[in-house]
Length: 88
Image 1: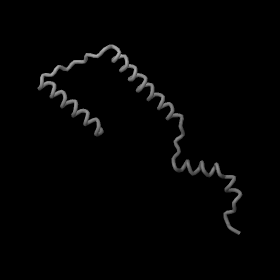
Image 2: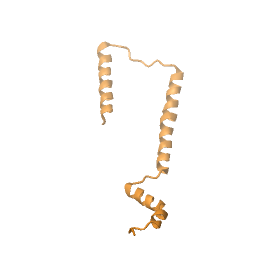
Image 3: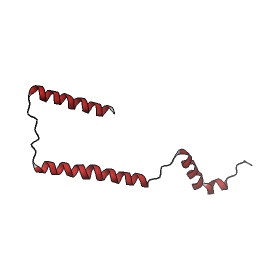
Image 4: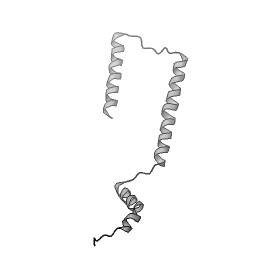
């Protein structure tokens, strides 16, 4: 796991221990609008956004350094052909 995940796990365990020791009430009393907005953000802000990102990522061309050099040479063949390789 990454560092952030470990930090969140330790914090959640610490909060759980605190709630058990202090006897604090741990309840979720939120209005329906809260739950609707949470579902909306979860679906549209995460699931659909990631799907769009991966579609966009799949449509892009990844150029390795070798492909970049070949593309540069192909796009500049005309200017290379007009120049002599041996100076006169």
